[in-house]
Image (cartoon, rainbow, N blue to C red; front, side):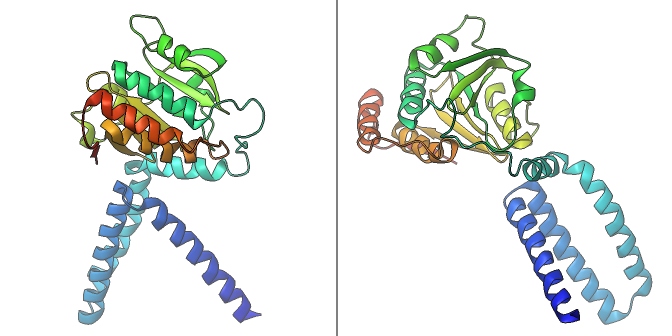
Length: 275
């Protein structure tokens, strides 16, 4: 019985540690966690070899203070992790209900916005609900079409500022206020891109931003932003839409046609992928 309990405990610890490390990989929390782990290992080895009892006690107390302060320092990452756990089992299947959006429609829409250099911001709701952010905007609940989206994001119309929330393949709300990221790496980015990253830090949403200056498209997810321009936009959107709209089926010849048409628009040979 004791051996069986030990195996269960080891399995639980393995799952917990693996989940934390996998979720923290590449984030500020992950880098700090790695740094603290290295320091702890070196300090423990050093104090064990030379029998520094006072130093060992000091390190133990510092670890307690670090555990408490990490809750404040890494509040966005911890909040997103807890919200994701709380949303398990509540995620609606995208193919059910009023599902109307397909990758073809959305890519058509974004490419038109990019070509006309109309700034836009979209958030695809995943497991974590975005209803709290919708309350700051205007409820629409409409089928997504390129004409509708272009009309909404054309200035100086009243709904062109802010972000749009997409739920179950429909445009749920527009003119919504998204949280703004304070990541220092985004110091040169505009407010729209900071809002895209901020929303991805707070929730598990896939956020799409179109730049009104360059026409480039950025995708924010889990606190990271990926930038695409030129002919790289269409295939990148296709990959991300497989996550945002997993149950939707895409026309096989559509992507290639869009890449060729976008090459003609920009008159370039290869697209640029900005990391």
